Image (cartoon, rainbow, N blue to C red; front, side, top):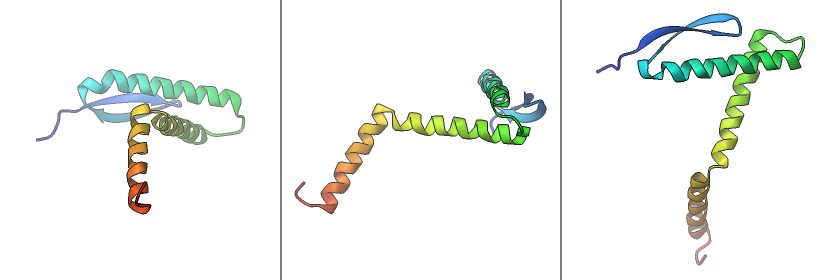
Length: 96
């Protein structure tokens, strides 16, 4: 059974991109595209001599880094990592 999707066009860095999404995701996707487009425009103002592909790559890297950093700062994730670390230590160094 396939989930229903809709086709929408979004504009990013002055170009139109058709994408297929679930109808309930449309608002969030449009908001994400707007934020990414704003980030690209900010980068264009800060860094001269780059093309749109460079700015899109820089924007993607910025969001990926933010996401990775945020996951490391998540207290629930950190507790799980600490538990795993203690279990590994017990296997490697018995008696801990």
